[in-house]
Image (cartoon, rainbow, N blue to C red):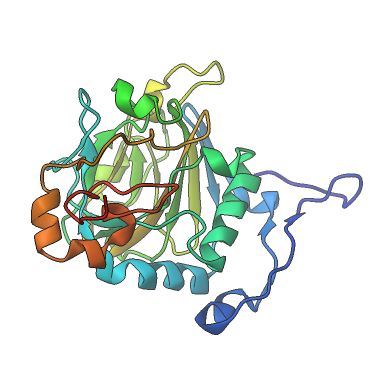
Length: 296
């Protein structure tokens, strides 16, 4: 654990400017009214891979706010194809999820600022936050967060780091595990079998896991292989922020085309209105199904 014994010359707290907020968001931010990063709450889990756990990174109200924003916009989760870089359905990943927009509201912006302060990585290098729900038996098989395809690498280089925020407690299962890591800890029966090999983290509401997918020399770290264990009892909500080595952004689109062959089907089911962040996007961040949504 990291400690600071004196407030001078170094303070363990990083402060951001205050913001006034209105409506429902006020209840989320009244308690603090400032974004604070406290290194004394960070636990170093492993050096291979480099992994750190921040206890209480988000407040319960912030967690509930993010879940509420995502709950009615979930779709089956996809994975990036290693060759084309396109998003495809796979049994490797069985959760449901959606993407928030960067800085979507005061709370999301505050969380993104806090992530940047903790990781010392610029906000603009991060992808939009992805919110995920795992129900009974759902999981994410061990995988890497760095890319194999050239398409995704062109958006901002490799993913250098991942911040995984736990938005709910889970009765049993749902741990994040690094199966290639060395761990001599003897785990009791409160851990699922999936989590007993390698460094593992139980999902606890408000905690956040930071791990690096690249070595300090920017080469891929194979020990960063990680997975989400099946949920055995309860429900798991999480939010992921992937951070790249360079500012992250989509290439400028030429013409009017869909990025996914299912765009027409999704549009017919009303997803242009239900999930506009992904389907339509914005002028700065064009969506994946603009043609089917008839916005170009």
